[in-house]
Amino acid sequence: MNQAASSAQRSFGVTQSGATAQLWTLRNQHLACDLTDFGATLVALRCPDRTGAMADVVLGFDAVSGYQSADNQYFGCTTGRVCNRIRAGHFTLDGSQYQLAQNNGPHCLHGGATRSLDKVLWRGVSTDAGRAVQFSYVSPHGEEGFPGELQLTVTYTLLEDGLRIDYRATTDRRTPVNLTNHAYFNLAGAGQGDVLDHQLWIDADSFTPTDATLIPTGSIVSVAGTALDFRTPALIGARLHAVQDQPEHGYDHNFVLRECAGLRPVARLSHGSSGRTLTVLSDAIGLQLYTGNWLHQQIGKQGKSYAPRGGVCLETQHFPDSINQAQFPSIVLEPNSIYATTTIYRLGAR
Ligand code: BGC
Image 1: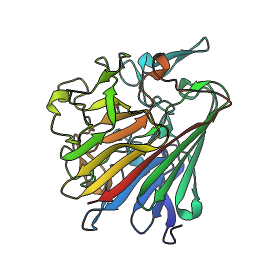
Image 2: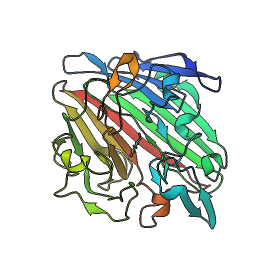
Image 3: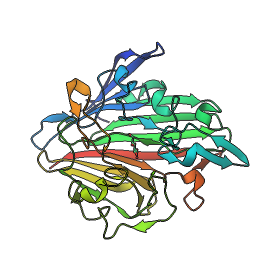
């Protein structure tokens, strides 16, 4: 165990409902991160470049008020109960119909409008001798329209070389669950321009094409010969023109990760001038690449503004709209089983 690990806690401000949000800082010899119980959110992740200079590489706000403002586009949050889109905010399960919030055109995005997991206060506890913070939340039956009382924990552990996120959930009746983290990364430092000069590798041979509203058509198509082929590392900006005229206005696509049991590297981001690298390891089957297309110069941490494409999200998850797409692997959690998934952001510099 790392003797130099430490954890500190302070107020992160008062929420609109009058509760005090907390901020935890985890530190070791190499890295530091800030986490808040509002949305079980990653607020900051500080890591060295090749010269040892530290920068915070995720977008966010200085206080909980920012996370409750219209400028928050799911920065660093835990996203669910079902991340990504559900067509028409509607599904049928065991003969019952469920209508969710339609907060993204006609669709439900990221778990709903007001009580999705990014918008509620979790309970945070420092664990693992100051190396980790475990957030827990009990989402009651019917919250945001979903069936089943869902008991959740999300544990962030600061490693010597990265940040590990373990998601766990159990339910008392069958319900769809699909959790991810929505961190926007910029390896030059949050607020330092856009990520078009970042090189990206994604271990995916195929993707799930969508209609104009970003609902999958149901087919799985090869990335070969498209702007989505990141099997050989490529600059994010190199082929952006091919996707920026689409309704999604940039990369906003679900990749079908190459099959493999357990945690494995699924994506790698690298930034030439700082030398920083981010390797995403996960046991997930899909990854949504979202290039911050709708960032709009909002003011974030330390007065920095976040330009369009000023961050890239690498959202490990099941496929969008899985609950309505019988041909996609199921996201239904059974009452007697445990939802468990892990993602690691491994940081380096070269
Ligand atoms: C989605 C985008 C959406 C964004 C909101 C992403 O996960 O794929 O379509 O605009 O979240 O911040």
